[in-house]
Amino acid sequence: MNGEWGEHCGLFGVYGHPESANLTYLGLYALQHRGQESAGIVSSDSQDLHSYRNMGLVSEVFTGDVLKRLPGRSSIGHVRYSTAGASDLKNSQPFTVHYARGGLAIAHNGNLTNAHMLRDELEAYGSIFQSTMDTETIIHLIARSHEHDLADRIIRALKQVEGAYCLLFLSEEEMIAVRDPHGFRPLVLGRQKNAYLVASETCAFDLIGAEFEREIEPGEMVIINEDGLHSFYPFIPVSPSHCVFEFIYFARPDSFIFGRNVYGVRRELGVQLGREHPAEADIVIPTPDSGFSAAIGYGHETKIPMELGLMRNHYVGRTFIEPKQSIRHFGVKIKLNPVKELIRGKGVAVVDDSIVRATTSRKIMKMIRKAGAEQIHVRISSPPITHPCFFGIDTPMRSELIASSHSIEEINRYITSDTLGYLSLEGLKRCVGEDNGSFCYACFSGGYPIKFPPRMGEAQLQLFEER
Ligand code: AMP
Image (cartoon, rainbow, N blue to C red; front, side, top):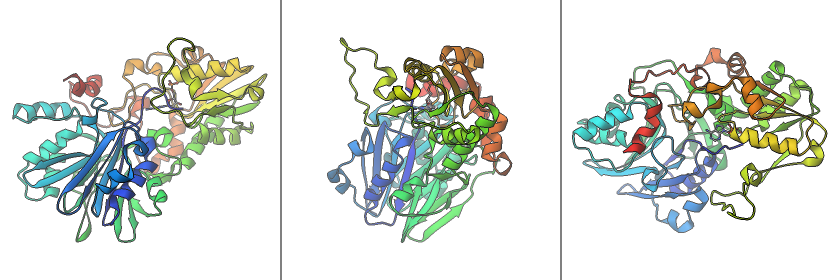
């Protein structure tokens, strides 16, 4: 289930296709789950860059006419949910500028941890920022670089930047993709005939019938131009810290990222959860849609039949207007409705992927209780979230994360369930195969893989908005 906060961002890029903007539009469609606030595409016809971005869903932002105004054989696109910078059109991406060497567009998924420091320095030297996005810092660093070609300018800029970034750059002549050395966020490379494609997740390739070639490696820079594709590793290598929350919640189950299919991992989390926290229940109910994959695994392991006890209305838009007077407090009811006949008189195990603030979970449990459940056993396929993310996932401040200040028993009482069981950190590590790759578990452990400067911490995410 989607709480009141949102996701981060999705990237898609095409080089060498006559309908590059159309393909990008479709790719963004498949990545809509990564951000619903704004969408944008920038195309290059070799002479100029053409850009369109607006607030809203991909289907709302782009029309046939808009796409016609984005000509050329290469395009990059972005869907956004703000992780740094206010929710505003000026903060939507791709961000396009014209600097001494021509046009340049940038699309970013992630979150820079030293952006505020760099911005202070740049402003002290006279830079004028147009947005409150951390991403704009990179543009200023590129524009100030004395290197001759764009790739070297980007490398020089990124050597000053810390944090999480998957980036797509588009100039009149080339498309450049970069993944930060920790590899926090996923980035994949594909082919469609002679065209090269880059996306946050493979589900974007499936939609347009493209071939998935490989993942772009942590610390890799891929330059695609008239001469084909060139790969470089310009940064000092570090051990990877893939975001484990991509597996738990963010990425689409049909995607292949970090060397695994997301659904397979999520199902395994459910199996492990069943081993750690079986329940005396008649049925397993997933919280739609985020709990589906884990609930299947949980039901399989515990041999408790899974039933669709909660129905989701998929057509609730962002612009839903709640009546002020007559019927108040729709809450989650506008999105979810229990199947009362199924639930009445039963012991139910409700499976979800995570608890963040616990506000949604509390409403759901009250709803299930009202539908007549005898007993409610909540099972969560990730450990308690105790720390905010500074690497591109939009989790609230620490004080708002219920598990940062409450015990499992207190959370159980708050959400009004009879029992509550979270997957253990060890169990999570076993499921994601910690031995063959390294993951970032900071939201569960506080062990951040990048050390923050003293001014950082919780203030970081707000800094740009306060200006
Ligand atoms: P709550 O009960 O209010 O903590 O909300 C929990 C629900 O929010 C779970 O169903 C999660 O799938 C979902 N969720 C977790 N992280 C996020 C996020 N960053 N953005 C939106 N929804 C999330």
